[in-house]
Amino acid sequence: MKSIFVNLKRFDVPRDKGGVCPCDNPGDWIRKVIQDSIDLGIGLLQDIHVVYFIPEALIIPAQEALASYPENRRGRLEIGCQSVFRDNVLPGKNFGAFTSNLPAASAYQIGCRWSIIGHSEERRDKQEVIGFYQPDWNLNQSTREKCSSAVDRIINREVLSAMQQGMDVLLCIGETAEERGGGDFEEQQVRIKKVLSDQLLRGLEGITKFLPDRAIVIGYEPIWAIGPGKTPPGKDYIQFVSALMKDIVKTQFGFDIPVVYGGGLKEENAAMISGINTIDGGLVALTRFSGEIGFYVNELKSIMDQYSA
Image (cartoon, rainbow, N blue to C red; front, side, top):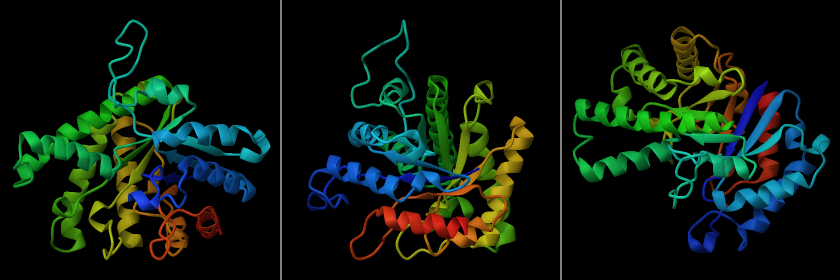
């Protein structure tokens, strides 16, 4: 079974307010997204599981829209949330002091059974918080590694909170340009291996007690290649990294882990990505990067068709 994950980011903000939602009422927009997804059979493609990670404000209308269709039309389409807080609401513990945070219990209560955790944007936010305390954290390798270690430990708390609540997790990891360093690919491989190994060992610590009841998938984000005008990694690079991560997890934790490409699954790279035998799917955000920039279900369907061709 392959997995296509869709991160709908800040689609709760209309375009005239600075967001990317093409509708003045984002709730109407997400309901239309679900309707179009059902009409196009997004959840019915053979051997492909699909999860939409949705901003908190839109989760309930999305869940309600999806629930209005019978199971045989929903297929393998699910709604998930965009990370959870590192602590949770539990019987006998603090039940209310989570203002501005999303505990896993809250996400679960509104129907989410998946969460995306450790996305590069979330990691950058945590680095910025650390930067208020230690502004020079990024000046040398030693302080960068300390910062990365701290962020990984927070991410791990979130993963454990989600899985303990009964949720499955897409855990995103990846290397920055500084971490990858210069030189040819052979020289870079040593540094890449260390960075990704550290992230995996810290991010997955303690999860085996939740397996096999819960699922965890790695989303590989080549952070150095994300953004306008940047060149994405080629097939050999992605194959090396995904095989490396599978081997690390198998060796250190004793189970086989799916890895999806999180650098942006698009129509132009879907066929190439699907041809990599160590990749088990992809992560989509926008489907259109020029003109009317945004997410369009018919274009997602085209991406999925190219991937499964």
